[in-house]
View 1: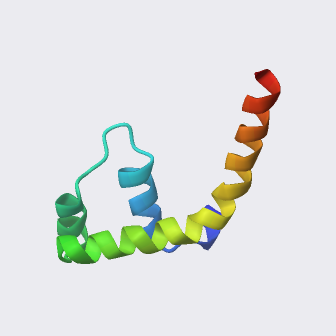
View 2: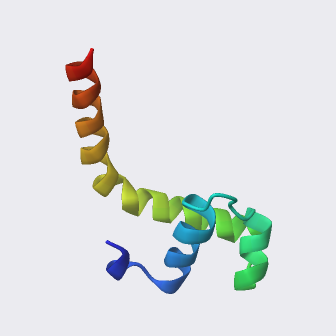
Length: 69
């Protein structure tokens, strides 16, 4: 999956979405030389790209939870 992401998307994923201490949208915008709003839009688009890949994992986690109950 990460191989299909652009450089900006990789930075957003690693420094904002999966980081232990994520940077702010303002910091992300400053790093890219864009507005905070544009950084938010890029993050939203990345989340939409990731959703189809994450949905099967969520379903699997739900089935494990029901099996353990």
